[in-house]
Image 1: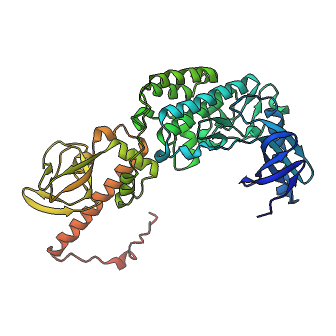
Image 2: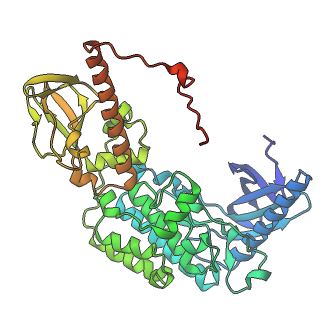
Image 3: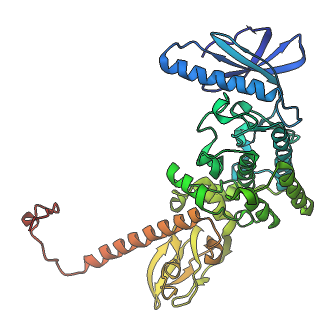
Length: 454
């Protein structure tokens, strides 16, 4: 790591604020500014061909940030005061804001109270509305580019990728293909279509969804699937993913994430107006943080190993935490009851026609046959608690409202459980079974069968 310089240009460096792949941000001061400023510094030390190409791109971004931000004067947009581009270095001097990025509020265990989230996004709406009135589209709205302090003061930053919509694309030196963060990009941005302010409002809708639920509206295991879902799939309901969110918010999110440009919000002010209407209906501002102890308990269970954190938080929201005493019948053989459970503390007995089949302990799942049997939907066994029992109860009606990812996780995990139990049952039966006929694998070369031409 290179030492911190004492002076950059006419600015005296006080300390380092942050460091990225291409730039270092310092807290600095000068006689021209009464308050400390943030100085983004880039050095062009490497003269290799690839690095020179990257440096030219950085120069383009820095010039864009200087040109664009010089035209923006809004309390929720970081102001740029100065910029200098030299042969071996470049820097941009901007307003210093002590807040951190919104990234820290996007995990479910760290979500802000709903009224605060709405207030923050409301301010972003008005800031983007101001930018558009100056002919500027940000193009990379995401949590990392929005700063907020403890008093919920908001600043949008990183206008280096911004598009000046008053200039033609082919002559616009700020236009760079492929900008934006894929999960937050609008369908038209992914397709490479011409952009206007509605692309920023779409990205802000994704941000709002993320901050209300702790997950993105479109998730996938690979980029191609993500792109397909952004272009074709409808987002899930925020009020179903987080029951604390008012149902009126569903309509706001749907309009912000409309794939049809004509149906999406026309401007930030219109988006902000609808947010204000939802905020007005929230009477109780008391916020109860999620129970991290229960999350930690589920996280330790083997059954939930493959669940992502955000999926596990969703499981806690849609499932019921149950406690019962000794010898309580939880499920009865032959009943059309599709509920199933996971043992958290204690033990249960599974039986058929009064004969014990198995005992299951912590982390084991029980009562899954009715849910997996898509024809009769009946329980195959009776389930009784052997002592005081705590278990997680999963109701199929609630699971049907969960995200596709959570439903798929349960389907895969439960299928695996049943297959392994069948294999174990077969091994037990084999102990008392007749000796099997031995096949001659040498005739086929083991299991490596060859296809013959006929």
